[in-house]
Image (cartoon, rainbow over all chains, first blue to last red; front, top):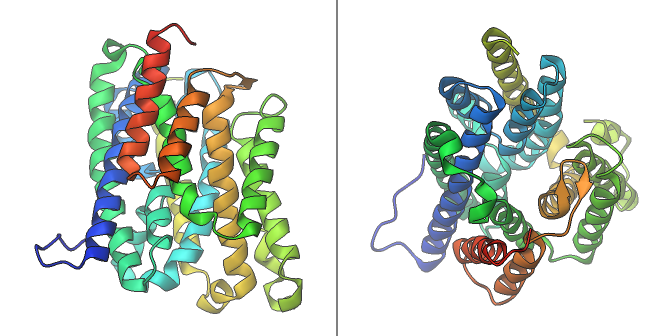
Length: 241
Length: 106
């Protein structure tokens, strides 16, 4: 679990602590809108809180709430939330060797495996800082996200439109800030540009959530193709998850 | 949906999401450590985050709309270029969108 910042912590550790905390605050604040939207969609305050505690993946939660709110079926709500959660599985593949934890800590690590904790962890230059970043961001987002989801659910309609406070734009900016340190290679920048084009083109044509998944499939294809020189048939299942 | 159906949706959806997270953590290390798999996973993260930026910024359900989010994202990008901290980037974007909407932009 996260070590607290000591007065004597080295600068790079202070930097990761600061990054983890700002990511936690920014992500947590957006939980207000999820809580409010969940109640508007027909969930009780308890259901909104349990959803956040157990699912703990913003994209999946927004998808589930959205489908429940528009009268979709339970099956489609579960499937869409699950499809959006596939990326957390990919994150786990990256994080598992980095964190090197077993038993209940591994289950806890899995539960805290989300966009934000993965992005902060994998942006660090050393394994030690990556671990600090992961646990601190995961725990920080977990506490604040759930607290603000509860606050949002209680506030319900009283808050009015979250757009008035620019919370939707804050989410865009948060994703951009998480993406930023990952764009160091030309290949990453091409993939990012391609993903944006695919997501925008597909948005009017397919159900919400699908454009993001298609972008991921494209990345699998590119990752596979760009790795031809290291071909190893044993990893042939790499693109099928 | 009845409250019971919503509970089932919430619990089953959560179980699926946690199972996917766990699956990623327990795939064999040799499989995950392979350069091609590691690179592909990294690129998938880039693609998902980039697609999420796009969808969060210009999608409204299945419609494409240009509203206060786009200039707000531009402000966020400039802040990132200037190496502003994460929270400053996010607050500037929210502030930009809130001000533009207060001024009448959708």
